[in-house]
Image (cartoon, rainbow, N blue to C red):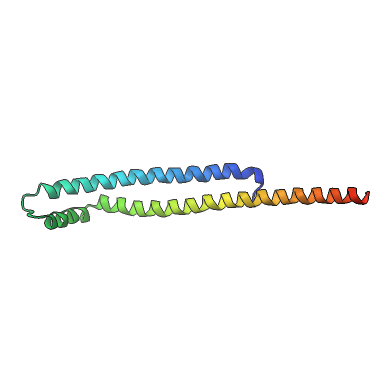
Length: 123
């Protein structure tokens, strides 16, 4: 367990890591949205498509062969997992900090109780 005074900076660093991952996740989501918008444009203006089911199938085909889209989806999954782990680590640090503060308070209370006991006995 780290010293009580080190927890605030560790918590701040862990929080910053969550924010960095969240930023990366938003960038990947923007990429995915662009790819999907492009696929929608391609399927919408294809005159051979007669109904929504055909357009959806065409959209799916366009996205399926787009390697960059597949990489973006993989990155999104990886970053979502990384963010969940970073949030779990942040919560762990916060809980450890709470426990360390409680233990420090208990130690102070015990020291005060010991001091009062000695004064009561007359030592």
